[in-house]
Amino acid sequence: MVIKAERLTKKYGKKLAVNNISFQVETGKVTGFLGPNGAGKSTTLRMMLGLANGQGTVLYNGKRLSEYKQPSEMVGILLEAKAFHPTRSARNHLKILATEGNVPLSRVDEVLDIVGLKSEAKKGPGKFSLGMSQRLGLAAALLAKPKYLLLDEPANGLDPEGIVWLREFLKSYADDDHGVFVSSHLLSEMSRLADNLVVIGKGKLLADTSMREFIAGNVGTSVYVRVSDIDKLEKLLEKQKINYKKVNSGLELFGVKTDKVGKLAYENKLTVLELTTRTASLEEAFLEVTAGSEEYTPKEVSK
Amino acid sequence: MINELKAELKKIFTIRSTYIIFAIMLILLVFFGFYVGGWHSQKIDLLDPTRLYRITQQATSFLSIFTALIGLLLITHEFRYNLASYSLSLSRSRSKVLAAKIIVISVLALVVTGILVVAAPLLADWGIHANHLKLVPQHYYYWGIAWKGLIYGWGYGMAGLVIGTLLRNQIGAIITLFIVPHTVEGLLSIWLKNNTVYLPFTSLDTVLGVNESAANSGPIITPVHALLVFLAYLVGAWIIAWYLFMRRDAA
Image 1 (cartoon, each protein chain N blue to C red):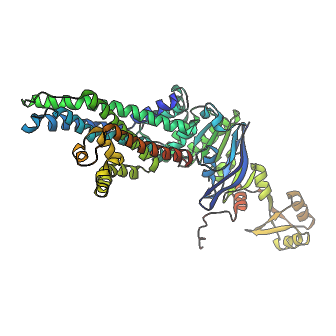
Image 2 (cartoon, chains in turn blue, yellow; image 1 turned 90 degrees about the vertical axis):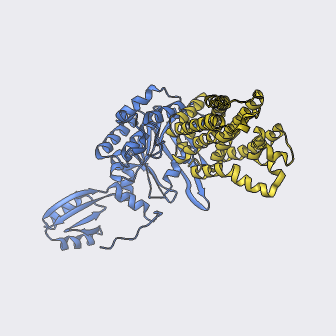
């Protein structure tokens, strides 16, 4: 049970926005969709829904979305938080979407309750905060209890409690044999949410792998050590051809494990003050992978 | 298709602008029918045996722009508020979405124009009697005004919808709707002279008969021929609009 996107390509004039990318979104997992600004994430999501024309195919469990009698049962979308008419009440907005998707109208109040907007149902969403708008967008995505959720930056504007709630909700939704494909710039949040990652830069696929493999494969782990005589340790490391760099008052070592470093220090009578394994963050791995793929590079901040 | 039709109807009747447009339309209808056409009638008007017919013609001509505006807003809201991403991904076919809009606006335009055609002469008659004026016996061409009025209202509804579909930009579409029928076609008439009746909105005016004086000075085309001219433009515009609706990205 997968969404299979194959050879997606989209041009805007001469610019190649999406360049022949293929990936999968599995059920039972949350797949994160990462890329720098202008990488082509939103265009890719739109292509997956047939909203942007281009080349390539997207199959939902083996069939095109338009081949399903009720596409709404296959995919729920949140592409833009403010995709509503400002004076049409939240409830009426969802009623229209329910009608279009052949969903019973009773489901409208259920989803408003799920996202915590039941008390605001009669209000026009024009004055909703970004966080409330995101919740309404999520309610719209959930209307038909779809097999897959495609969400573009759903955590934008949510308060901390909202972010935690969203994470838990999406995880449990995926656990219930649904597929969740979610783009976000909040990398720390993504690292806690996603099982798999699809990373693109300048329209090209940079990675399609599990979160663990992505981090380990691109930055890996390192060992941080502080000893009584750092110069002596440096000489030993050079002798043994172990890569390292100075970090604060210690050294960060690459390609070794803590037991080897401990043993080396012990045999050379160095007092170990600190010895830890450092796991790289998603942010580090992301920056490593997307280096040079940024569409917009800001001027460096002078210190 | 039923779902699409229901959804389009709900879209029209769940936004404030629809009710504002209807309210303005109603106020203008009462003002135009009761006051201008009835209460405030000049003596010479009261001697016109086609007075009520003319009032109905003019009210239909003047107020049909509002049904066009509802049609225009129905499609341009989709793009202004990015609702198209829902409409087009929830439906199996873009054609169905567009067809539903055409059907709903057609029905709405016919109902609204039907009410106009009935209410305008009644309001005028009421205004005349309320001001204790006496109108000469009237020749009211019921079927003539019925089919011409309904075609005219429907034509404007379709024009609003097709302009909105072609341009997608709400402000640009509204400006186009307001300036093309009279300003642009008016300016073109300086160059086209008698052939102005072959322009789309002028031909629609010819169907209703509101530009009879102009038509009398040029080549005469019957309302049926004028209708065919207008339909030719409309079909052409819809072919382009349909193609673009199918091919263009939804945002």
